[in-house]
Image (tube, rainbow, N blue to C red; front, side, top):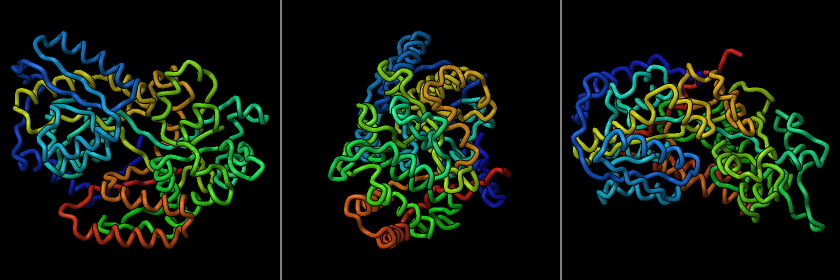
Length: 452
């Protein structure tokens, strides 16, 4: 699945951490598998998640099943808006008001992990750790694993097939090279008499989609976002400038979208955009909406050269359930028991990948026929074929988010020069990196492109 390799130097470092990290952190090591002790906790524990309807439905099913097997234990499952949950969890260390277990996004997990708030997974919790693509990346700090990975999201193209047909086009006509794709998107765009965009051909109005696309384009050029030691950002390299210029031109030269219009998914779901670019995550609402059945499809995003080499872009792990270390051992044991029940089988690994519409973390299951069944909109397929060519960036520094938002706002909204903006935000972020108390867990340079 993920053709990502660690350099010998990096591998030796991780191996040493794996050997020493289990003891060094001094945290209790709960036993599972044959050595599992009966659960002693009785009572209710809080379980937090962010809004995603398909996951909520399956999670509630699993909670009900597990509670029947463990009478006397209740999981109070509470769902928050994505941003609200991130804020609550990232401030929980100070307030000591975190839940016992929560779904933790991959962009929050490194900060929570480095704060000591997360409990390490028992080494015998799962029997398939050596088969998971995520294992070496999740062990990158101290050899422990603190979360699960359901699968991998990456940018794909979503298209309204009715709108394609109106122009005599089909999903098979979508180009694979960016220069051709731009012209294709312009064909689908509608402008008013004053030249303003009425219907984006391919909408891009969402901060994360814009940022992910910028990162995709940098990796597609064979470049990276940080130096070899991950101590300095290289955002303003030639590839970074070219990528940001491409996004600026999307709005101001080609006029395929307009920053004053609503976000891409809202435009698309209300038949006001012919397509949009974003992670497969957005397929959940389309799959759940009967009005969209059979009216949409997806393709992999284009690349500079029209193929996967040197890379197709970045991949975002969909993490994952974490247990919190500031709860008593008996509570932690109960939470890990649920986690083992929810993920600890081939059937569950496949089901979670289907729920999230993502290629699975289990390398040996990626070709399982189950993934081609009911793959509405070909979402798993469109992501899956690109996965061997995807870079796992590791930690996406939370501090960088402020600078990236500023970068995109200045270029897209204020129409500032991409090179000038990148030089500015890169220099200021590097000043911040120089003061970091702990190194960032950036793994982008562990990527090795497939041979062909």
